[in-house]
Structure formats: C-alpha cells, structure tokens
Amino acid sequence: MATTTIPQKKVSPGRHGFKTGEFIVYPAHGVGQIVSIDEQEVAGHKLELFVIDFQKDKMRLKVPVAKATSIGMRKLSEEDYVERALKVVQGRARVKRTMWSRRAQEYDAKINSGDLISISEVVRDLYRADNQPEQSYSERQLYEAALDRMAREIAAVNRMSETEAVRLIETNLNKGPKRGVKADNADGAEVEVEADDAEQEEAA
Image 1 (cartoon, rainbow, N blue to C red):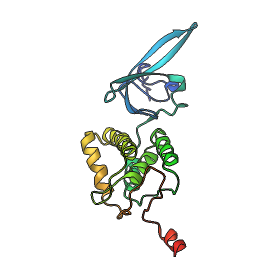
Image 2: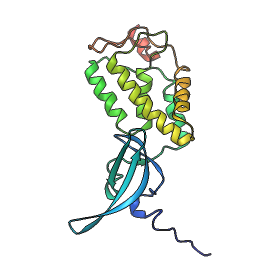
Image 3: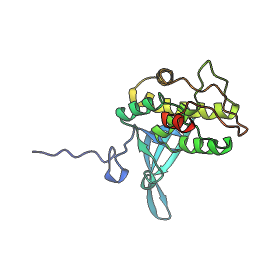
C-alpha cells in the first residue's frame, strides 16, 4: 500500500501537531489562530516560531515552536469537553469563605490557566441572575473575562458566533439551582451561597 508524504509546511512532528490556519488556545490570551510558521536565525541557530493572531484583541504573538506545549499552548477542546464545561455552569456556585482579594487571585489564575473547565467554574461562581444583587466592579470584570474566554473557545469548537456561544452559556447558567440571595462583597465579607447537602447537614 502506497504511503502519502504529508507536506512539511503543514505538519511536522517537532511542531506538536500544530499547523498553519489552526485555531489554538494560549493560556494568557485565549483562542488565537496560527497564521504562519516563521524561521528566524538567533546566534547562528534557526528558530521556528508560531505566528499567532488574536483577532479580537488585535494582537499578534510569536511563540517558539519548541516551547509551545511547555507554556501551555494547546489545541481546541473536544466537543465532549465543551459539553462538560456547559454542565459545570449548571451546578451550584462553590464560593469559599475567604477574603475577596484571595478569591480574586484564584479566579484570575483559573482564567489564565487555559483550561476550559477551570474557566467555566469561574463563570458559574460569579454569575448573578436578574433577581440577585449586582456584582461588584471587580467581580463583574472577572466574570466577563471568564465568559469571554469560554465563549470564544465554544464558538471556535462549535463553529458559531461568539454571541451565539454567550447565549448558549447563559442558557445553561439559567438551568442551574437558585443562587443565594446575599451579594458577594468585595470587601471581604462572607458570602451566602446555596450549600451542598453535606454542608447543610453539617450546619444542622
């Protein structure tokens, strides 16, 4: 049986399976597209670079091919992983009884982890329904950042617009349990959220 040679420009084992034209996820910036693979000579050595466009942010990034996976660059999530993330946002908010500044750092780390499930947990925990108190400014910023990251990846995976992806996420959020009625104060006050059954038993 004859074998077909894959053109070098498209895929190379040293390029971790990434190819030109492909959408990828870069932890600190979310979904981008590899527009080219360039070569540069540095100190007599040839260095291959992924040239990645983040169209919404109007930004272009050059990432050394050899370091791409070690810095967390990855392919888009599979459809079943997207479904798992949408199930996560239907769950109960799990908010720790710690100072807001510490929780904000944890949320920020999750958003920049590049992991869709971690990002969906931030969306779930910071979501506020129409009948709930408004978010603080810092909460809203983190919520919108997480929602944007999540929507961009879902849009790329499901080949839909970001607006449609946001609508899909919000539909799943509204399938979740009723949230607690106290606002999450950014000044370090405790938060009242619906506890799991085990927590309710402990409180009893």
